[in-house]
Length: 324
Ligand SMILES: [Cu+2]
Image 1 (cartoon, protein in one colour):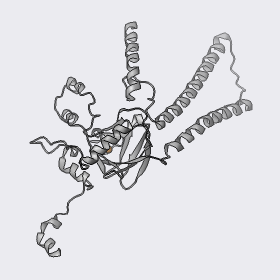
Image 2 (cartoon, helix red, strand yellow):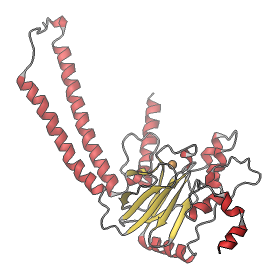
Image 3 (cartoon, helix red, strand yellow):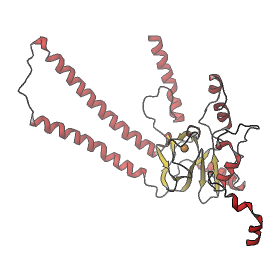
Image 4 (cartoon, helix red, strand yellow):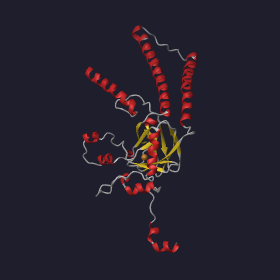
């Protein structure tokens, strides 16, 4: 028992610096992560305040209960007070104390919530579009856009029958890796406008401290200011169809100069996003849309991947020629 406990302690201690670096959850993590942005820090502080108050209330209640049960027990000759109805003084007390506690929590929480929704004075805007089952990122005003999908290796593993645990563990970020990461500068207020092209998705990177629904026809806003360079992973957080579990998010935060260089290189490349993943030859037709290059191309060109082609338009070239 002692050996197991000390081993557990060693594991917990060993994972601590890792947790600080990655900001991603670690096995056996008990508390909420601190995250790497002002919003995440705010959420963490609000959570800790509420947690401390809850723990203190729990301690007081359980100590009082234990004391009463022990001190006034039947075997010591305690007699129940059957005529007791209520105590005005106590009732005032147990109404006022919770109200005061709620106000103590609500005042800073409201200020934090207001700050979380304040997208003013942002230095750049990224439009995020959720699609079944991938994300499109547009750096507004820069002419750069990225389609980000589950990486090929994760996709291969997840569709391989009889894949072994060892094979899965050999992939460092199985199902949490993408082909094209969303690159963002650190210490920069980045505004997001978030929408979707087919069904409701939700863009969620825990280290940033918020999640935001991506809804067709609606534009939601959010912002972030990542303080530490690093790779932060997330997932779609709204059940959006059969491949909902296979549209991860990877944010790579780099120093401003590095970001500027990256953006310039993307622009220089004629805003051509990275090569789409290839569909394996002789597929069974069940490959997810996220690996179908034709559909990725549709997404890039701004056509909804679900948009059906009207066959009659293309059917008669003579009409088209006559109209021209
Ligand atoms: Cu989704």
